[in-house]
Image (tube, rainbow, N blue to C red; front, side, top):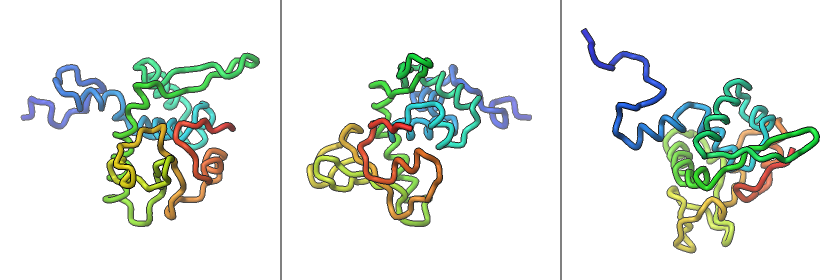
Amino acid sequence: MNSGRLGSVLPKEYSAENCSIARVMELIGERWTPLILRDAFFGIRRFADFADHLAIPRAVLTDRLRTLVQRGVLERRRYSEQPPRQEYVLTDLGVSLWPVLYQISQWGERHLNEGPPRRLFRHADCRTELDGYGFCPACAVLVPASGVEVDNGPGAADHDDRVSRAMVMPRPLLRPIQS
């Protein structure tokens, strides 16, 4: 008989694990969380825009946003007094996740995508496409999120939501998309 953890349901927290990867997975390992973070880098800040772009159940989005705020990855900011409205903005801690998310996306493009790239990422200063690790080959620098421009690639799908329409033209990461 199996007396260990094999075959059991994975716990939400890995408190018994002394492993940094386990800690990261506690925070961003749930399937919707990396997509929420991706969209935050693309400039999505408002609940309705996350919900529309991701087609995520509202209760799930509420829970994920709450967790990201509680853990300091996002912060809630009021953008309207009447009626009171909040938006979600990446903190410095959240922005520091950019290299991780970028490399995951590039790994997916290389190994899981069967067509041309969906998104192109360029160094905003010189417009050179970044390599798979986020370096600008022309400038020989690791480009921070604030220096990255994103554009639809030849494999980008057509979407009818307002967020996708706002992202048709090249734009800097982190610049808010206004709906």
